Length: 71
Image (cartoon, rainbow, N blue to C red; front, side, top):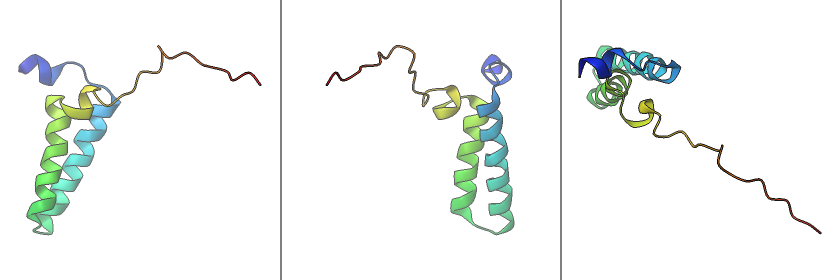
């Protein structure tokens, strides 16, 4: 678990962490429970590297062939 938190940081994880913290703090200040839960989810994605923060939502286009249509 320690390695999962401390290694593999990229810009996407940092963005998820920062946005999650902003949403969480703002929601707590506004006393909105739903917003705080959503913010905590994004924060956890950044910290624990799951979901899109793990790179699972990235589409790899390197293996696709470009096809041309002959008229």
